[in-house]
Image (cartoon, rainbow, N blue to C red; front, top):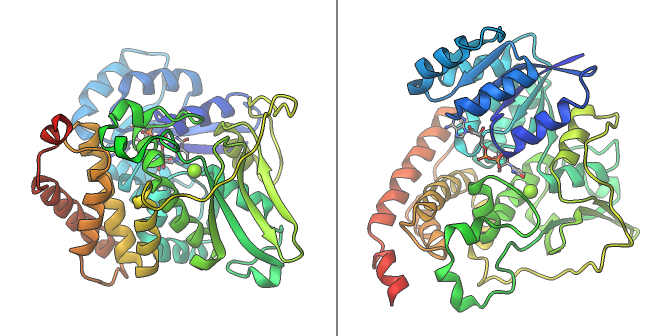
Length: 403
Ligand code: NAD
Ligand code: MG
């Protein structure tokens, strides 16, 4: 029986994780569930999973959460709140597995706490690698943490690599290239001239995947693929030239590994995050996930194209930031979080997300990020900068839409 903590239990990945776990009560028991503020859902999840602890990240919700949970006498879990509590339940000695599924930079410290405690870490929070890849991988090695990728592309690559693959050693493993696939999002074929009119709801309506709003917008701008490009470099020790981004709008192939002899291994499946979650939970065994099997008689066709640079400026920015170094990827990640939030609130237009990101990168000088404190300071600086850039955009968004 393995004990698991789910960081970000109330999100899209968190809910899928619970769906897989409850199919296997003989294999897994839940130690802790965490949420930012959705106490009602957290309560329902606690009734289903009987955790020892629940954590509300937002301390302002603590009283409300305590009251709600104490009204339900049959629940014996303890209610905690705040950032320290997140780190506590990620690193407690009783915990075997941590699902790192908080969205954004907020996931960094609790995920790192799990890594430093030598846990089996199921990594959905790609932002922690984008912000602090070098420190993160060092910590994993030093503390013997096992990092298993949940992002469907990285999980696919992991499954297609040889079992004895050594970090960064592509050539000696007979590998020529990693093919990172992406759907291209909802605006793959929209006229470029219409993209500035895209609304938050349109951007969040992904054709194949059902995800949280931040990653949905990132998928529409392909910043998500850019973050995944950086994530792949850190996870597998790759150079930029080792990775090719390929658009595959059907989202059935989740990524591929090309070998020197011309073989290409692809991992396929229906686009449902319960597959990579079940894979990582049970690794190296296999368990049932609830995902329906692929029906090849129903698959019409597979297509592949190259992403267009002027449709996806965020993808290009992320690749450039990745070459510039850790300061640039941390800056880009923070600037983008602020810009996406502003877009979701209707304050900036869809194509202005990339404009804000680019201006933030241009206004940031190279600096060293050799401690986690430096990473957090750099993240904070980039957030303030991004807010300034948004305030100073040459024309307010509303006027642009009307013009
Ligand atoms: P989501 O928005 O649906 O859920 C986010 C979770 O994080 C929620 O439980 C929320 O309560 C919690 N949270 C938000 N802000 C927080 C804060 N400040 N402090 C503590 N907790 C906080 O997001 P999601 O789509 O589940 O994505 C989660 C992570 O997984 C992201 O890093 C995303 O990039 C990654 N990911 C998601 C998918 C997907 O299909 N949804 C696929 C691949 C990777
Ligand atoms: Mg992905």
